[in-house]
Image (tube, rainbow, N blue to C red; front, side, top):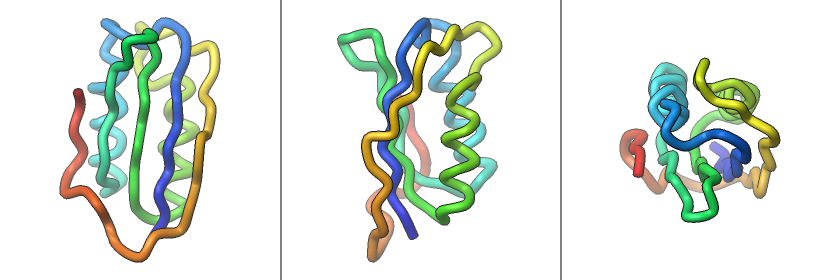
Length: 91
């Protein structure tokens, strides 16, 4: 199991970005969250199988049809012993 932390920049708030990220994460059986930041960015933390996390990371570049993603920064991708979350939430 791995933990991914990423930051999406651009027009990613108020456009369904977190909702579409949540749908994709749940479809991939990942746990974690997508959270709006005061900076206008969206922070995504997800845990699960590495291949599924990489698929989610790819999805983050166009998560919502109404978003205009300028950049997705991978802040960390680390192996973990056990999952920290139950489900995938939005904040």
